[in-house]
Amino acid sequence: MKQKIMTNSNIDPELEDTQDDDLYEHHKFKADKGQQPLRVDKYLMNYIENATRSKIQKAAKDGNIYVNGAIVKSNYKVKPGDVVQVMFEHPPYEFLLTPEDIPLDIVYEDDSLMVINKPAGMVVHPGHGNYSGTLINALIFHTDNLPNNSSERPGLVHRIDKDTSGLLVIAKTEAAMTHLSKQFFKKTSSREYIAIVWGNVEEEEGRIEGNIGRHPKNRLQNTVYIDDQDEQGKPAVTYYKVLERLGYVTLVSCKLETGRTHQIRVHMKHIGHTLFNDERYGGEKILKGTTFSKYKQFVDNCFKILPRQALHAKTLGFVHPETKEWMSFDSEVPADMQECIEKWRKYSINQKDYMDS
Image (cartoon, rainbow, N blue to C red):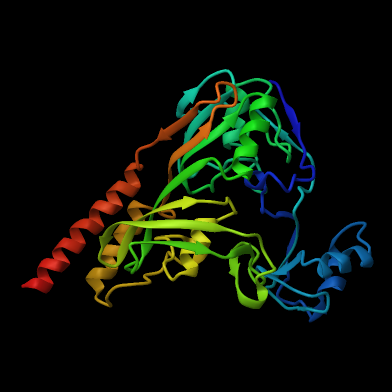
Protein backbone atom coordinates (compact mmCIF):
# COMPACT_ATOMS: atom_id res chain seq x y z
CA MET A 1 0.00 0.00 0.00
CA LYS A 2 1.34 3.41 -0.89
CA GLN A 3 1.81 5.81 1.98
CA LYS A 4 2.57 9.48 2.19
CA ILE A 5 4.03 11.44 5.07
CA MET A 6 1.90 14.48 5.86
CA THR A 7 3.45 17.45 7.59
CA ASN A 8 2.02 20.81 8.57
CA SER A 9 4.22 23.61 7.27
CA ASN A 10 3.64 27.31 7.72
CA ILE A 11 0.36 28.35 6.18
CA ASP A 12 0.34 30.98 3.47
CA PRO A 13 -1.68 33.87 4.93
CA GLU A 14 -3.01 34.73 1.49
CA LEU A 15 -4.78 31.43 0.95
CA GLU A 16 -7.49 32.17 3.47
CA ASP A 17 -9.66 29.15 2.83
CA THR A 18 -6.81 26.71 3.26
CA GLN A 19 -6.18 28.07 6.72
CA ASP A 20 -7.02 25.67 9.46
CA ASP A 21 -7.81 26.78 12.96
CA ASP A 22 -7.75 23.28 14.42
CA LEU A 23 -5.67 22.69 17.52
CA TYR A 24 -3.73 19.48 18.02
CA GLU A 25 -3.68 17.87 21.43
CA HIS A 26 -0.14 17.01 22.49
CA HIS A 27 -0.79 15.99 26.09
CA LYS A 28 -3.87 15.26 28.18
CA PHE A 29 -4.12 14.36 31.85
CA LYS A 30 -6.97 14.00 34.31
CA ALA A 31 -6.12 14.94 37.89
CA ASP A 32 -6.98 12.14 40.27
CA LYS A 33 -9.27 12.40 43.29
CA GLY A 34 -6.40 12.86 45.71
CA GLN A 35 -4.77 15.70 43.77
CA GLN A 36 -3.62 18.48 46.08
CA PRO A 37 -3.86 22.04 44.66
CA LEU A 38 -0.75 22.51 42.51
CA ARG A 39 0.28 25.11 39.94
CA VAL A 40 -0.45 23.79 36.45
CA ASP A 41 3.13 24.39 35.25
CA LYS A 42 4.48 22.28 38.15
CA TYR A 43 1.77 19.68 37.56
CA LEU A 44 2.79 19.33 33.89
CA MET A 45 6.47 19.15 34.82
CA ASN A 46 5.62 16.02 36.82
CA TYR A 47 3.85 14.33 33.92
CA ILE A 48 5.59 15.35 30.68
CA GLU A 49 8.87 13.62 29.97
CA ASN A 50 11.79 15.87 29.06
CA ALA A 51 9.72 19.01 29.62
CA THR A 52 11.47 22.14 30.81
CA ARG A 53 9.84 24.76 33.04
CA SER A 54 10.53 27.46 30.46
CA LYS A 55 8.82 25.50 27.67
CA ILE A 56 5.74 24.90 29.80
CA GLN A 57 5.60 28.54 30.87
CA LYS A 58 5.91 29.63 27.24
CA ALA A 59 3.03 27.30 26.34
CA ALA A 60 0.95 28.93 29.09
CA LYS A 61 1.94 32.45 27.97
CA ASP A 62 0.93 31.62 24.39
CA GLY A 63 -2.47 30.33 25.53
CA ASN A 64 -1.77 26.66 24.80
CA ILE A 65 -2.61 25.18 28.21
CA TYR A 66 -6.24 24.33 28.88
CA VAL A 67 -8.06 23.10 31.95
CA ASN A 68 -11.56 21.75 31.37
CA GLY A 69 -11.57 23.32 27.92
CA ALA A 70 -10.59 26.85 29.04
CA ILE A 71 -7.22 28.59 28.68
CA VAL A 72 -5.37 29.02 31.98
CA LYS A 73 -2.26 30.84 33.15
CA SER A 74 0.76 29.04 34.58
CA ASN A 75 -0.28 29.85 38.16
CA TYR A 76 -3.64 28.06 37.87
CA LYS A 77 -4.02 25.51 40.69
CA VAL A 78 -4.97 22.05 39.44
CA LYS A 79 -7.79 20.44 41.43
CA PRO A 80 -9.15 16.87 41.60
CA GLY A 81 -11.00 15.89 38.42
CA ASP A 82 -9.49 18.70 36.30
CA VAL A 83 -8.74 17.76 32.69
CA VAL A 84 -5.45 19.38 31.67
CA GLN A 85 -4.53 19.64 27.98
CA VAL A 86 -1.58 21.07 26.10
CA MET A 87 -2.71 22.11 22.61
CA PHE A 88 -0.76 23.48 19.65
CA GLU A 89 -1.58 24.48 16.09
CA HIS A 90 0.87 21.91 14.70
CA PRO A 91 0.53 18.14 14.95
CA PRO A 92 2.41 16.35 17.70
CA TYR A 93 4.16 14.21 15.10
CA GLU A 94 4.24 13.61 11.38
CA PHE A 95 1.47 11.18 10.68
CA LEU A 96 0.94 8.85 7.76
CA LEU A 97 -1.58 9.70 5.09
CA THR A 98 -2.92 6.38 3.86
CA PRO A 99 -5.06 6.04 0.72
CA GLU A 100 -8.45 4.56 1.58
CA ASP A 101 -11.10 3.19 -0.76
CA ILE A 102 -13.93 5.46 0.39
CA PRO A 103 -16.75 6.24 -2.08
CA LEU A 104 -16.77 9.80 -3.39
CA ASP A 105 -19.76 11.68 -4.80
CA ILE A 106 -17.95 13.26 -7.76
CA VAL A 107 -20.11 15.96 -9.36
CA TYR A 108 -17.53 16.86 -12.02
CA GLU A 109 -13.99 15.82 -12.92
CA ASP A 110 -11.42 16.61 -15.60
CA ASP A 111 -7.61 16.62 -15.78
CA SER A 112 -7.34 19.82 -13.71
CA LEU A 113 -9.92 19.55 -10.95
CA MET A 114 -12.74 17.68 -9.25
CA VAL A 115 -15.94 18.95 -7.65
CA ILE A 116 -17.03 16.75 -4.73
CA ASN A 117 -20.35 16.69 -2.89
CA LYS A 118 -19.17 15.93 0.67
CA PRO A 119 -21.59 14.14 2.98
CA ALA A 120 -22.16 15.41 6.51
CA GLY A 121 -20.00 13.57 9.02
CA MET A 122 -16.93 13.28 6.79
CA VAL A 123 -13.86 15.13 8.04
CA VAL A 124 -12.06 16.96 5.22
CA HIS A 125 -8.48 16.35 6.38
CA PRO A 126 -6.73 14.34 9.09
CA GLY A 127 -6.24 15.95 12.48
CA HIS A 128 -6.35 15.01 16.13
CA GLY A 129 -8.61 11.99 16.56
CA ASN A 130 -9.35 11.73 12.83
CA TYR A 131 -6.41 10.06 11.11
CA SER A 132 -8.47 7.93 8.73
CA GLY A 133 -11.80 8.06 6.93
CA THR A 134 -11.25 11.64 5.79
CA LEU A 135 -11.87 13.20 2.40
CA ILE A 136 -8.11 13.41 1.80
CA ASN A 137 -7.71 9.68 2.49
CA ALA A 138 -10.35 9.07 -0.20
CA LEU A 139 -8.83 11.59 -2.64
CA ILE A 140 -5.32 10.14 -2.59
CA PHE A 141 -6.79 6.69 -3.26
CA HIS A 142 -8.78 8.07 -6.20
CA THR A 143 -6.03 10.24 -7.73
CA ASP A 144 -2.23 10.00 -7.70
CA ASN A 145 0.09 12.96 -7.24
CA LEU A 146 -2.37 15.55 -5.98
CA PRO A 147 -0.62 18.90 -5.42
CA ASN A 148 -0.18 20.06 -1.83
CA ASN A 149 -1.66 23.33 -0.70
CA SER A 150 0.33 25.73 1.48
CA SER A 151 -0.36 23.60 4.57
CA GLU A 152 0.71 20.36 2.87
CA ARG A 153 -2.82 19.08 2.32
CA PRO A 154 -3.23 17.29 -1.01
CA GLY A 155 -5.76 18.83 -3.39
CA LEU A 156 -7.53 21.11 -0.92
CA VAL A 157 -8.35 24.59 -2.20
CA HIS A 158 -10.86 25.30 0.58
CA ARG A 159 -12.70 23.26 3.19
CA ILE A 160 -16.03 22.84 4.94
CA ASP A 161 -16.70 21.61 8.46
CA LYS A 162 -17.13 17.94 9.29
CA ASP A 163 -20.89 18.18 9.90
CA THR A 164 -21.57 20.54 6.99
CA SER A 165 -22.52 18.86 3.73
CA GLY A 166 -21.96 20.14 0.21
CA LEU A 167 -19.67 21.16 -2.62
CA LEU A 168 -15.87 21.41 -2.60
CA VAL A 169 -13.46 21.95 -5.48
CA ILE A 170 -10.27 19.87 -5.50
CA ALA A 171 -7.16 20.82 -7.51
CA LYS A 172 -5.43 17.99 -9.39
CA THR A 173 -2.45 20.00 -10.70
CA GLU A 174 -0.10 22.63 -9.28
CA ALA A 175 -1.38 25.16 -11.83
CA ALA A 176 -4.99 24.48 -10.84
CA MET A 177 -4.12 24.79 -7.14
CA THR A 178 -2.51 28.21 -7.70
CA HIS A 179 -5.28 29.51 -9.99
CA LEU A 180 -8.19 28.33 -7.82
CA SER A 181 -6.58 29.43 -4.54
CA LYS A 182 -6.12 32.94 -5.94
CA GLN A 183 -9.81 33.08 -6.82
CA PHE A 184 -10.79 32.20 -3.26
CA PHE A 185 -8.34 34.75 -1.88
CA LYS A 186 -9.48 37.50 -4.26
CA LYS A 187 -13.14 36.66 -3.52
CA THR A 188 -14.01 36.02 -7.17
CA SER A 189 -15.33 32.52 -6.51
CA SER A 190 -18.99 32.12 -5.59
CA ARG A 191 -20.50 30.03 -2.79
CA GLU A 192 -24.05 29.78 -1.49
CA TYR A 193 -25.05 27.87 1.62
CA ILE A 194 -28.50 26.88 2.83
CA ALA A 195 -29.11 26.95 6.59
CA ILE A 196 -31.89 26.53 9.12
CA VAL A 197 -31.48 29.08 11.92
CA TRP A 198 -33.28 29.58 15.20
CA GLY A 199 -35.83 32.41 15.37
CA ASN A 200 -37.73 34.53 12.88
CA VAL A 201 -35.12 36.59 10.99
CA GLU A 202 -36.64 40.08 10.82
CA GLU A 203 -35.01 41.48 7.68
CA GLU A 204 -35.64 39.80 4.34
CA GLU A 205 -31.94 40.09 3.56
CA GLY A 206 -28.87 41.59 5.11
CA ARG A 207 -25.10 41.90 5.35
CA ILE A 208 -23.14 40.76 8.40
CA GLU A 209 -19.68 42.22 8.86
CA GLY A 210 -17.46 41.51 11.84
CA ASN A 211 -13.94 40.27 12.40
CA ILE A 212 -13.82 36.59 13.32
CA GLY A 213 -11.21 35.11 15.63
CA ARG A 214 -10.82 32.45 18.22
CA HIS A 215 -12.99 32.81 21.31
CA PRO A 216 -10.83 34.01 24.23
CA LYS A 217 -12.34 31.52 26.69
CA ASN A 218 -13.35 28.60 24.49
CA ARG A 219 -10.77 27.80 21.83
CA LEU A 220 -13.12 25.32 20.15
CA GLN A 221 -15.33 28.26 19.17
CA ASN A 222 -14.76 31.35 17.09
CA THR A 223 -16.40 34.68 17.87
CA VAL A 224 -17.02 38.14 16.38
CA TYR A 225 -14.85 40.99 17.63
CA ILE A 226 -16.49 44.43 17.50
CA ASP A 227 -15.98 48.03 18.64
CA ASP A 228 -12.72 48.46 20.57
CA GLN A 229 -11.75 44.84 19.87
CA ASP A 230 -12.18 45.05 16.12
CA GLU A 231 -8.42 44.93 15.49
CA GLN A 232 -8.58 41.30 16.63
CA GLY A 233 -9.60 38.43 14.37
CA LYS A 234 -9.81 38.56 10.58
CA PRO A 235 -12.28 40.53 8.44
CA ALA A 236 -15.37 38.54 7.48
CA VAL A 237 -18.49 39.37 5.46
CA THR A 238 -21.61 37.21 5.03
CA TYR A 239 -24.74 38.05 3.03
CA TYR A 240 -28.00 36.36 3.98
CA LYS A 241 -31.46 36.15 2.45
CA VAL A 242 -34.64 34.68 3.93
CA LEU A 243 -35.97 31.80 1.82
CA GLU A 244 -38.84 30.66 4.03
CA ARG A 245 -40.21 31.50 7.46
CA LEU A 246 -41.09 28.38 9.42
CA GLY A 247 -42.42 29.67 12.73
CA TYR A 248 -39.67 29.41 15.32
CA VAL A 249 -36.95 28.77 12.71
CA THR A 250 -36.06 30.38 9.38
CA LEU A 251 -34.63 28.87 6.21
CA VAL A 252 -31.92 31.19 4.87
CA SER A 253 -29.44 31.41 2.03
CA CYS A 254 -25.94 32.65 2.94
CA LYS A 255 -23.29 33.86 0.52
CA LEU A 256 -19.69 34.23 1.59
CA GLU A 257 -17.46 37.13 0.65
CA THR A 258 -14.70 35.71 2.86
CA GLY A 259 -14.05 32.18 4.07
CA ARG A 260 -13.27 32.18 7.77
CA THR A 261 -13.52 29.07 9.93
CA HIS A 262 -17.16 28.57 11.07
CA GLN A 263 -18.01 31.92 9.41
CA ILE A 264 -21.74 31.38 8.82
CA ARG A 265 -22.16 29.66 12.18
CA VAL A 266 -20.42 32.51 14.02
CA HIS A 267 -22.04 35.37 12.08
CA MET A 268 -25.58 34.01 12.37
CA LYS A 269 -25.13 33.50 16.11
CA HIS A 270 -23.79 37.06 16.33
CA ILE A 271 -27.09 38.46 14.97
CA GLY A 272 -29.13 36.25 17.32
CA HIS A 273 -29.94 33.38 14.96
CA THR A 274 -27.78 30.39 15.89
CA LEU A 275 -27.87 27.49 13.42
CA PHE A 276 -30.39 24.79 14.27
CA ASN A 277 -28.72 21.91 16.17
CA ASP A 278 -25.26 23.51 16.03
CA GLU A 279 -23.93 21.95 19.22
CA ARG A 280 -20.66 23.87 19.29
CA TYR A 281 -22.46 27.22 19.29
CA GLY A 282 -25.46 26.34 21.48
CA GLY A 283 -27.97 25.54 18.73
CA GLU A 284 -28.69 22.09 20.16
CA LYS A 285 -30.83 23.79 22.83
CA ILE A 286 -34.41 24.94 22.22
CA LEU A 287 -33.68 28.63 21.67
CA LYS A 288 -37.13 29.72 20.45
CA GLY A 289 -40.68 28.50 20.89
CA THR A 290 -43.03 27.42 23.64
CA THR A 291 -42.61 25.59 26.93
CA PHE A 292 -45.19 22.93 26.04
CA SER A 293 -43.93 19.36 26.35
CA LYS A 294 -45.38 18.55 22.92
CA TYR A 295 -43.23 21.27 21.38
CA LYS A 296 -40.13 19.96 23.16
CA GLN A 297 -40.90 16.49 21.82
CA PHE A 298 -41.35 17.90 18.30
CA VAL A 299 -37.97 19.71 18.42
CA ASP A 300 -36.23 16.64 19.87
CA ASN A 301 -37.58 14.64 16.93
CA CYS A 302 -36.19 17.26 14.55
CA PHE A 303 -32.80 16.98 16.28
CA LYS A 304 -32.89 13.21 15.77
CA ILE A 305 -33.72 13.60 12.07
CA LEU A 306 -30.93 16.17 11.63
CA PRO A 307 -28.22 15.24 14.19
CA ARG A 308 -25.82 18.01 13.07
CA GLN A 309 -25.77 21.72 12.32
CA ALA A 310 -28.32 22.59 9.62
CA LEU A 311 -25.87 23.83 6.98
CA HIS A 312 -25.31 22.75 3.37
CA ALA A 313 -22.86 24.18 0.81
CA LYS A 314 -25.34 24.21 -2.06
CA THR A 315 -23.65 26.03 -4.93
CA LEU A 316 -20.09 26.66 -6.07
CA GLY A 317 -18.80 28.81 -8.92
CA PHE A 318 -15.31 29.61 -10.22
CA VAL A 319 -13.29 30.21 -13.39
CA HIS A 320 -11.77 27.02 -14.79
CA PRO A 321 -7.95 27.26 -14.49
CA GLU A 322 -7.34 26.00 -18.06
CA THR A 323 -10.37 26.94 -20.18
CA LYS A 324 -10.94 30.23 -18.29
CA GLU A 325 -14.68 29.58 -18.53
CA TRP A 326 -17.00 30.25 -15.59
CA MET A 327 -18.25 27.01 -14.06
CA SER A 328 -21.30 26.74 -11.80
CA PHE A 329 -22.38 23.74 -9.75
CA ASP A 330 -25.52 23.11 -7.74
CA SER A 331 -26.43 20.32 -5.33
CA GLU A 332 -29.59 19.01 -3.73
CA VAL A 333 -30.24 19.81 -0.10
CA PRO A 334 -29.54 16.44 1.61
CA ALA A 335 -32.37 14.23 2.84
CA ASP A 336 -31.82 14.89 6.57
CA MET A 337 -32.16 18.66 6.09
CA GLN A 338 -35.09 18.29 3.69
CA GLU A 339 -36.96 16.10 6.16
CA CYS A 340 -36.31 18.57 8.97
CA ILE A 341 -37.49 21.51 6.82
CA GLU A 342 -40.65 19.60 5.93
CA LYS A 343 -41.42 18.91 9.61
CA TRP A 344 -41.03 22.60 10.48
CA ARG A 345 -43.13 23.54 7.44
CA LYS A 346 -46.01 21.35 8.65
CA TYR A 347 -45.60 22.61 12.21
CA SER A 348 -45.71 26.27 11.17
CA ILE A 349 -48.83 25.69 9.01
CA ASN A 350 -50.59 23.91 11.88
CA GLN A 351 -49.54 26.65 14.27
CA LYS A 352 -50.89 29.32 11.91
CA ASP A 353 -54.17 27.44 11.51
CA TYR A 354 -54.43 27.17 15.30
CA MET A 355 -53.79 30.92 15.73
CA ASP A 356 -56.33 31.78 13.01
CA SER A 357 -59.07 29.56 14.45
